[in-house]
Amino acid sequence: MGAGCVSTAGGLKCYRFGAVINQGLQEMYQLVYPHGSRPRQFGSIRYDNQMMKALWAMTIVVVAGILGGALAISYFGMNFQSSVTASLAAVVNAGPAYNGEWGPPGSADWPEYFDMHPAQKLILVILMFLGRLEFIVVFSTLNIIFWLRR
Image (cartoon, rainbow, N blue to C red):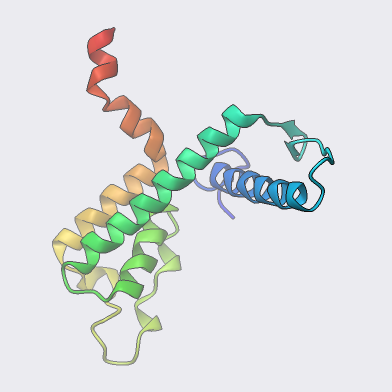
């Protein structure tokens, strides 16, 4: 699943995914039993609306980053399915999740990493960097308004 249980290589992403799934199940429970009450927790950690807003914001930013990266990669000649797979593999830092042999034999739709256009490789490097350091942290660090108010 990733590196350590709370590392940015996968553990935090899995925790966030589990918490979002748990929140969805909680919402479904509320639809069936509108006056019922269940503890809002994921594992042993209780969460509130503020934490769920942060988790949903992170989920939306990661999905937007994956789709934006896939569009940028597909601009240089890859089909969309292979570019989404390469983009997802780069964001979660799991290089073997993309394999050039998945496409039809002799097809250029699923190129190996070394056959990709240099711009595609650069996009994948940026996605790997953003996925490893977490999108929200990088974007908040680049927030000029925050730094000007200090």
